[in-house]
Length: 104
Image (spheres, one colour):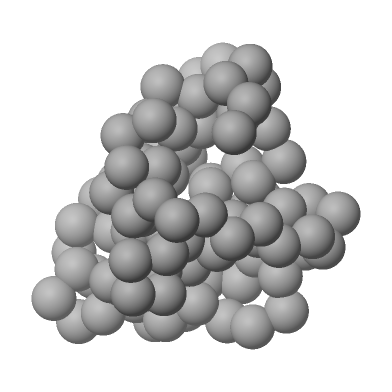
């Protein structure tokens, strides 16, 4: 796996047992034998990620819409649900991201 610009073009990560599927902007999917936790630790400095549900981790740069229960992403057709347990945390992270984006 390339280390330079590793996070570039990643829309979201999808967990599948001990594998991770990386969904990219061009519609390509890359299957990795590393866990989602490994990818999150690695991508944490490159892109802004939110994990709304155990199965998905989304890149906020490609966020199209959020209605409180679902994320809609650019370059990804299915809505990403937000778990009830993580809803407050996700909303506060999203609010923090939006404030940072507006101030820059």
